[in-house]
Image 1 (spheres, rainbow, N blue to C red):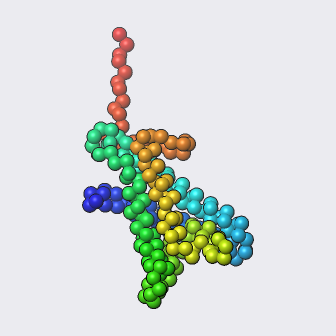
Image 2: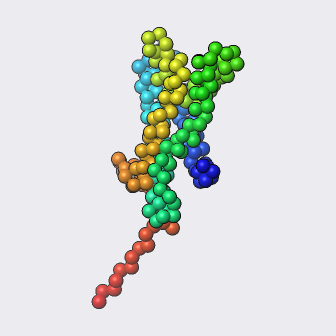
Image 3: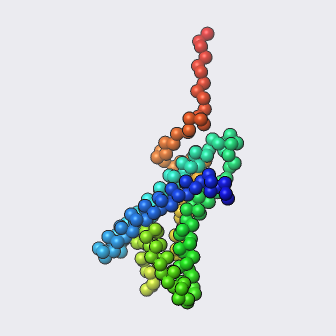
Length: 198
């Protein structure tokens, strides 16, 4: 675990910053659609923000996997197929902490939990803003953001995408031509010299 944090802490922080930036973007879109009182527009913009967020995670984690490809093949680094999952798990740690306190506020009728849970729910609306529009939908008369388990559920797409992206990256498999990643100079195969014509 210590070696994982030492080696991957930059990637984890970058992943969370991607979430935060996309969350602000999604939150602003949800506010605009809310003021327009248009649930369809709110769902479309929120869905777009979520897809954009997952796309950013995919490209980032795919490149991490691709960067590990040659060191893994040459035995300089052990192959850890769940690297993408653990990266996302670590980046989602703030989300899990917020979800935990929101759960406590919902399950236990204790004043201190209610206050902490209320603060955490307000923070979650901001740092998980890409989901705000979707969580405003109602099932019956209750909005989805009223269910504590939804705050755990929304972490699943990012972990699934990062797990798949790393596995594809380390195998150099891609769906499109969007990724033009270059090997580091030290990892490139040396160019073979042409034999002189005899």
